Image (tube, rainbow, N blue to C red):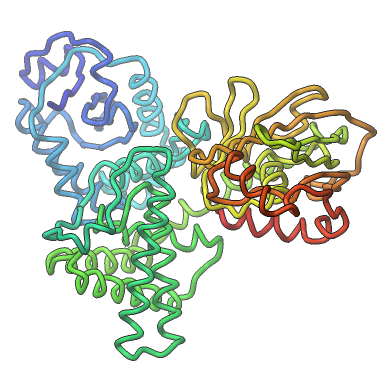
Length: 517
C-alpha cells in the first residue's frame, strides 16, 4: 500500500476521498507527500526526501491523470539516477502496486517540501533555468541541493546517496541456481556476529576455485593475477555491503560506478576496461560452477556494461558532482579527526594490560600518547600478545562498546573505534578488550598513570616498558587451553624480550590493521 498525503484543496481538485491516518505510517519509503507551488507539483518520498517534479498541476482534474504523470516522471528520474536498469521495474512495482490518498502531511515532510518550493521559486538561485531543464533534471538539481542526516553514521549526505543506498539494499536481483551439495558450500546465511568471518571464508573459496580454473585453462600468470585481483576486490565490495556475489546480480554496476571514489584516484579508461573484462571472466567462472544460470550471466554482464556506460554518459557531470561531495565529506571527517586529537593529546598514558583468567599473570606495560585512536590501541595490545587477527574483537568501557565500523554488531550502545581516542579517558579507568568470541580471550587494560605534555604523535610512538609471558596461541581453547600448553612448553611463561618485541612491534601493528581493513 502506497500512501500519498495531500491537502484538502488538492484532494478536491483530484476528486479523491482522503482520511486521517496514523502519522507514523507516513514515514517509510513507500509513502509520498505532495506540495503545489506555482506551475510545479512536488511529489516527495517521505523517508528519502526524494523529489519528483510534475509541471502544470492545473491540468490534472482527477487522480488518474495525476498518477499517470507522476509515474511517468518518476520513471524518467530513475533513468537519470544511478540505478541499474534491471532494478527500475522492481522499484516501480514496489511504489505503485496500490495507491491510497491521505489527508495531511507530517512535519518532517513539510520542511523538505517547503525547501523544495523555495528553490523552485528562486530564479536567481542554484537551478540553472537557462538550460530549460526537464522535470527529471530539475528533480536531480533539487536533490543535489538537499542534505539529510544519516541515522547510522550521523553525517550529512546528499539525498541521492540515500536513494541509491535504498535501491541497492532493498531491491536485489539474486542468482537462482539449482543448488546442490557442491555449490551449497559457498553459501552463508548466518545472522550471528561471525557473519563477516563467514563471508570471508565464502569469498576465499570462490577465489581459490577461480584461480584453479584459470590455471587449468592455461592462462598466463599475469592474466591470472589480474583476474583474481579484480574478483577479490569485487568480493570485498560485496562483503562490505553485507551480501555475497550470489545475492545481487546488479551490484557490478555500483562497483564500477564508484570504483574511482573507493580507490581515491582517477582511473584511466584502459584500466577500467581491464576491470570490466575481469568481472566478465569472473561471471564465466560462476556460470561454470553452476552458481549462475545463463540468465544470471546475462544480467551480471548487463550490469557491468551499464556501469561502464554510466561513467561516460551525459550524466558524467552529475557523477562528478557526487564525487566532489564525497571528497568534501572525507575532508570534513579528516579535519574532525585532526582537531579532536589536538584536544586529547595533552598527556601520556602508562598502560598496563593483563590477560584475564590465566596464571601466572601474563602482562604488558607500555607508554603511549592520548591522541592514540582506540582502533590503534587495540592493534597495539593484540600484537603484543601475538594475535594473528583470525577472529572478531571489541572494546568495552563500562556499558559502552566500541567496534570497527565493518564489524559493528548492531547494538545501539556500540560506538566506532575509529572515532574515539585514548585521551578521552583518565588515569584509573579500565577497559576490556575481547578477542575471539569462541575462545574468549579477555585483556584487561588499566590506565595506570599519566605524565607530561607529549609531542604530537598521532598515536604512533608507543614505547614498550615491561612484560611477562610469550603471548596467546590462536584456536587453542582460550586461557584453559593455554594453561595446558604451558605445561609442555615452558617458554610460554618467561620474561619478555623488550628490545626484540619493540623492534618488530610497529610493523606488526600495521600488518594487523591491514588485515581488518
